[in-house]
Image 1 (cartoon, rainbow, N blue to C red):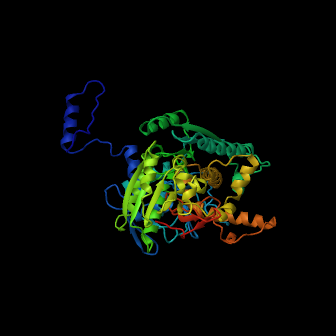
Image 2 (image 1 turned 60 degrees about the horizontal axis):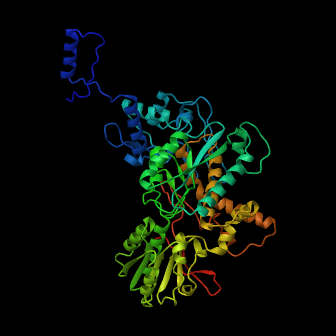
Length: 581
């Protein structure tokens, strides 16, 4: 028996009988320990809810009403009700909330369940007690006397496990996340060091302007008035709209120090989520902070997100990593695949990582990969070396605009086909040397320009109204979408402002909401007599990307890229279909 956990405190003097009794308890195996402490009970409940593991260590076992047996992670509550307990929508099936307010609350708690056109609220019921909840989980009959959905398992839990699960459910999403009050929501955006001032200013201008415009039209709770921006009818009736406050968290120094800086910012002002943000280097410390503090990281503009995005972060794409995978797949599929690929990059965080990703992606293809590092004051040496490439070679430039501009003095076009990262050079507006354009190709993770102009109609209209300069279209379009989509998502959440639920709602909404918004824009164009161009009937996006989607647990909304070239008129032409590596 382990007696390290036995703690005996005598108030005053212990009598000899007391010590004899303690000795008897210990030798008899009665150990006083922390197994029944509230924290341990909640941890056992969490394991049942999230992992499908009982207090005994055995897997949770459930039986659905259609006699299908589920166990372990498949039986865990989180698989259907999600981390927040706020439920989900699967096709026509609405999985009801089971968090504290919805199970045990005396007041009627409301959630909008269906993210499609015919939106419905959750089904309400009398408050559960510990006993009635145990009965429902055992029998599959709720406290209205109605049989649960056939997909809902029923469980024969022992007293200890039922108590642990009930304790966990009683605290699940029972109060707003940090940064939320009855009238305000606090947000932050993160600006990493090394970002060009004009790009960071472009991000901040959009965030500050759009939030200021939203706040100028936000009606105080429980009041109805005129507003120029749309809110859901439920949000209007229930008075759940809040003002937003934005805090700019500017980081300094080495990335190893960023998390401490973020922790300090967060102690001074907790926030509900980090919205947008920008970095030319790593984003890992920011993501680690968000995972540790359970703060949603909402669509930042970063060239290379962490490989493992975690639970609390959502990104537009994998950035240059997806470009590396797309180009490798494209080259490998060609019948006249190149003999050799030379990749040119600067010796920095993004350059080193994407060069490694690209090399790994080409393993087993039979294509030889060589690397060349661009150093300051040695551009001419590099250019001279590249002049010796053969026509069946390929050169891939992982370079930003400033580095590309430094290569403009090349004497004649390369014989080899040149590929460029649209992510790093800011799209087709990047300074590709004129003499390279006839053989240049771009790895292009965005929608093609003609369709994109329609998709970004709201974005361009906002820019014209606010007389804003277009500095970096991809980054500015990303920032605009991030704040607009956040506004729509929070509107649908009503008063259920929990960080986990924000991310769950986003993953559930993003694909269908994009299609709905695109259709609304197309209808409005028709009403105004604006001609519908080819492809408009297939619009699925209001972003710079062709289509965004996030499944449960996914973090990267756009999954691929095109290979494009510039024709004689300087117009982008697709050389490939949309490629997903």
